[in-house]
Length: 204
Image 1 (cartoon, rainbow, N blue to C red):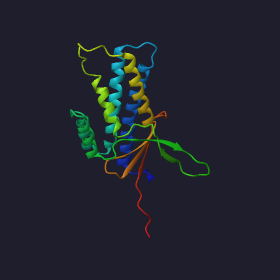
Image 2 (cartoon, rainbow, N blue to C red):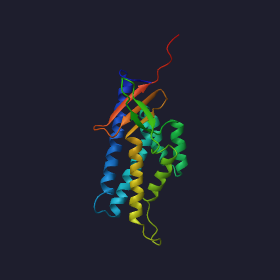
Image 3 (tube, rainbow, N blue to C red):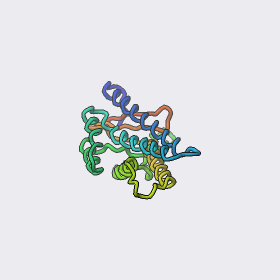
Image 4 (tube, rainbow, N blue to C red):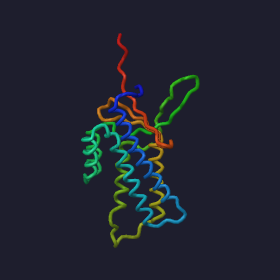
């Protein structure tokens, strides 16, 4: 892969992906503020739940920015009632839609930066279950059931937040079509996004 520097369409994709990640970062920061404030109530947890669920949805659809139709189809996928149908719809649009959380290692002596998988990152199969659990918390509670344990809910939401941060702080994802790879750093201020394009073998 080599970094893309010229084509206008790729520059636009880069801007769109960056804008999407800026939104996700803001949602994660808002959720963190709500979950770690000195005093919080059920409203704080519900709002944090919503922010985290939206962060997951926007992350899942972010790789579709290279194709507006695909992005719209991805957004519609979240109207499906069953979580497995959502994942199936997104994979049909882009098999590599979910970002891969990575560690960046910079050896000395001019050796290129090495990307290694972050074992604590949220996988493409795990996000669906997490999104489902978040969604359940946004429905009306059965008045005959016991009250929710807010402390337990906060612990779960913090775990979701941590998982998303570990996934997105540094990550790579393939855009629609499979020809271009995005590398993004959410930990950076401002968010950094780079696009790489596949390079074929050197001619014999």
